[in-house]
Image 1 (spheres, one colour):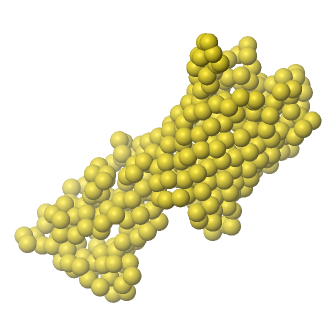
Image 2 (tube, rainbow, N blue to C red):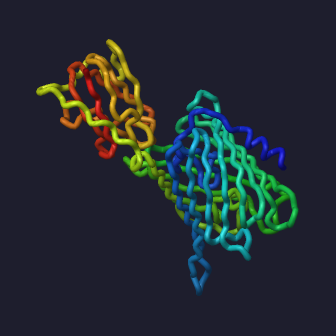
Image 3 (spheres, one colour):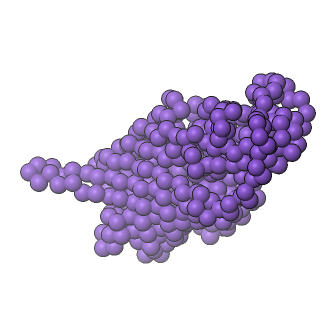
Length: 362
């Protein structure tokens, strides 16, 4: 068991990380060991419930709160807190403190997303770990996991092993289906435990980084322990994801731009659309984490700027004086504009007006 955890720890590396994965990219019980960008704090709220039979018909709630952050690319640390866990009846609150790495990704040129997690579960009083492999082939994303879990029911009972997989199918940009199945190996399954499963509908809320999952499952918490142990009853619920980009609140303000010469304006040119050839120098930049990367860009007249949207929601590049407007730039797409006249050009994103930048043309 210890050897497996050292393998997980050895996966750390300096590669480009994925954005915090929303519900359209994963299933409720199989996360794929997503990681978040440095400078982001992730809040996820998972709430499941079950109704007792007549005549009481009482609703019992099973909420799990996730809080996570990242200091280095490809890594994430955080905790899950479940206020009503069936894992240890004498200890109803379940805490899981975890660290994740995702050293290899498809976005970085590797054929698979490779991730790992190590966590300490206080209710189980033991160490848990997971290895995951994922492959995206639009509109599908498939995830396979192997887990090593401490046994919460037997003191010094050694590790329990679980294997499983999940699938996410995008129907549209804002709508998808997802489901999964995870099972402890038969010798490790406690009496009454079933294979864990979930299935539901995933929704991306337009023009926001938030996603929602409406699903059914026979598990009750979002920890590795909780998502590996199924019960005989079905719970219904939802998960809501809230990534918070700290740069929106604590980022440095760009220096004030130079005043624009009277009558100055940007001019479209053949290179102002992605499909056209670029004539002259070009500067490439991105929109990431609900922010223009490079809040002030200084260029020479005749230079083309290419903006790439690396966020999961669409953005625009819109001039404050309405002299140019990209329209909606979808996730992963680019838009170019050639600035031919000297001046200062403040710009913003229309659906996210707090995203601002300035282009200074000399």
